[in-house]
Length: 173
Image (cartoon, rainbow, N blue to C red; front, top):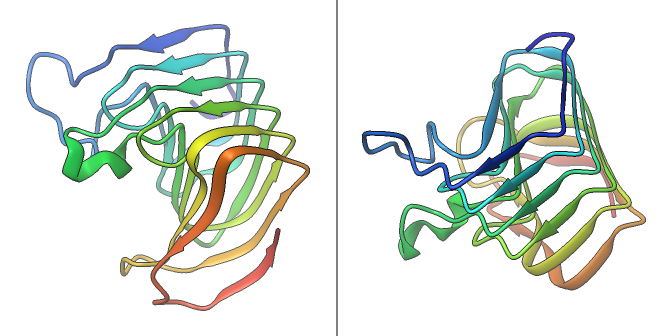
């Protein structure tokens, strides 16, 4: 996906294809792996098992703007956290995430989950229902640094942290 714009598509009802897929590793609406300079704009990710939009492992300079992520869910009730609107994870040494003007509504997991990432701006988004932004600081994969969460609307949604394994530095809310 390096250097690409992904625009105007709908990723919905992805339940793992023809075989069981654990949403902690695969699944969901869209997954960006080890890419740079990717823009996701005006997309819908809905009713997926797993995250709606997902960046995993060493991504840099990712922009997500004007997307609608809603009604994504985990594999079952015990794993509801898997159904995030957006999941950003495992980019601890680079970063450069601009998450702006998205609608994140009624996902079983958080609107946005952050795990071992840095240099993230979350601005002008609308969060509805449950956890709006989740800081995952409860696993052993790394800390959370230089994250700004400003100018967002939280409608019956909150900012939550799980765990305290690593220092969290440069967090602005």
